[in-house]
Length: 369
Image (cartoon, rainbow, N blue to C red; front, side, top):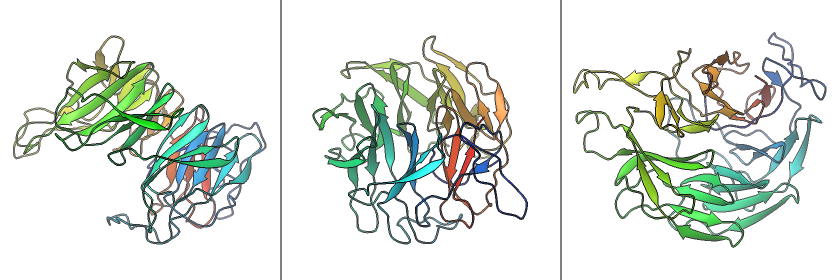
């Protein structure tokens, strides 16, 4: 099993044909399927790189690029066609699509978060559209343009009734962290974190805890030894930080699943032949905030866990979904799309949804673990 591509969404699934004929569309409402299955045709033009999010018991597909896809070995910095504003919502109960209102601006390369059934997007824009901070209310089918973070676009994380915007780099006097109050539509600066100049910064909400992970900025990371993950916890008042014990993890982009902080990539690194570190440091691991202890990932197939995917209390590790509490795994079925396709994938509380609106044939696929 392999995922090529970007982000993630989810729903409920039905049976699929893998032969030369046309794949079946998702089955009758209420059905549950253990293989990938095609969903009904969406009321959207062909596109790739769309933003896909689970919100208000629906999967919404928004924006994207209607030009040629970036080749697998290329680095395409700008959209190859028109950056799009339209979208549609899929109801996994009725198995029907519904068009949604157009976004005020093109939606590309979006960071997303949901609070009280409202979707918030920090989008990089594209094709002449500027970056923007937007809110979409599915109940009213309306969009609102909000003030952007004072220092540009970072990740977007929901915690309680507020949002956090966290840049990936924390170099001195360059980037700061901010929190947003949806009630007043105002941004407020967080106190500087205690980890100093770092990179690979991410904040993850695990239960009621807000945990920042990052790595030290050094001139020669491999030659000077591994850049290990360091951590700090943000106080619930958003007013102070507490440094947590360092780890022996060298991975990035953790997620929250099952009350654990999970770095889901299998394997590790030893520094290579030049500047070898004398041992292998793991990319992945499971941190239990209540006890402050780490646990290794169990063995799985697959070489990568990118893009990140959380389905309820399960997290993708390699070619499987892992329960980080019991350490049991479920192998994800082989994908029905081609090796050159790069669907956007994501998870809901109960299923996985993959969207690839540019390939021939079905654009949406579902799988229920």
